[in-house]
Length: 214
Image 1 (cartoon, rainbow, N blue to C red):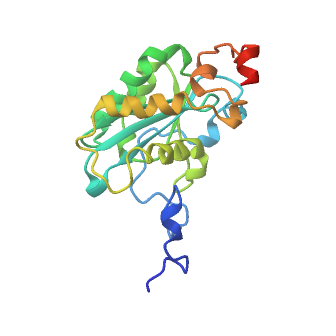
Image 2 (image 1 turned 60 degrees about the horizontal axis):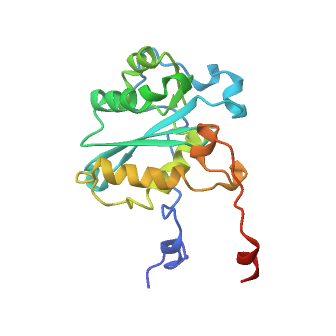
Image 3 (image 1 turned 45 degrees about the vertical axis):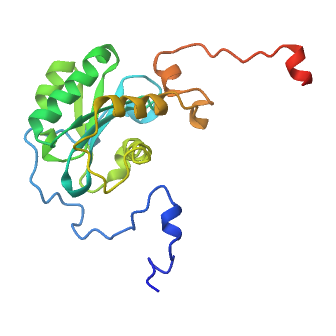
């Protein structure tokens, strides 16, 4: 009976079912270097601390058979998530999606960190529209955008890997994002990303004495 690294079918019960594969690129970007790219090593140290609202990570989630794309953005401190469906990951569409998603939150947009995909080729235009600084992780160092990678994994619970994203609607994406943004997180002291991002007061649940006795 075939097995996956001797794990049998147990991998099917994991949220992330992708097997680890060794990279042989020695950390070098093989797709070419983006023009005027600013590396993550130049990003302000305050971004790493996650002590302020306004530092975002961005990525694209590709549908099965490379059919359809989700542009995803997540704010580092609050874990607040935004997403937008597209038919392809051409830079023009991805650029417009990022600007449209973040324009309402421009006051809370100080930095953005992307990977080195060509869909982010118009990063200077994004920076100009949002009045923010854009940085890029090192090639094949996905852990430098670990929060975004984890958030994409959460979105995969709604849009499983291998399924086409061509027919996914904005309403469906909004519903998934709403559920993520209103899910209490242990790392946030059991507050939701929505509460942290908008700095909403936590209102403890109060029960009447009768309810406590039933």
